[in-house]
Amino acid sequence: MAQIENYRALVKQLLSEYASYKYSYGEIETQTVFDTEQDHYQIVSTGWEQKKRVYGCSMHIDIKNEKIWIQWNATDIDIAEELVKLGVPKHDIVIAFHSPYMRQFSDYAVG
Image (tube, rainbow, N blue to C red; front, side):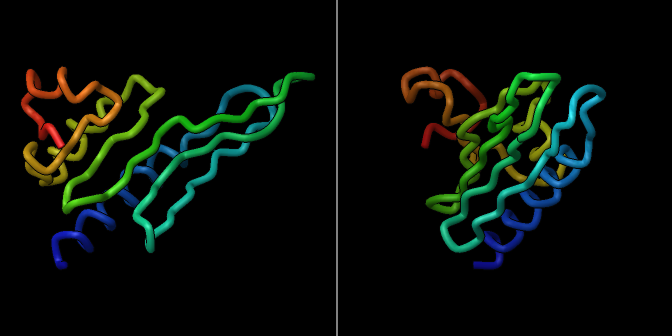
């Protein structure tokens, strides 16, 4: 259980850091969404750029089966590598947006 608590803290720390970056255009708010009961963590952007609505999830991470699952990453940041730098072993990180077949060819967990 201590490992899960540590992973929660690390994921929240990482997403909070990236959510603190502000858009250089438009009236766009970046929000963190932390569901610590179901272990779902996201960065969501919402607002307006001129007359165009902006809404979307740029990062989504889950914790399940004692592993960190990177469900979505719409940025150029290597979230998995950032987690490794924070001390998470590669065998506890799943690149979930890759197919189960492709995961076997990475240095990370299959699932």
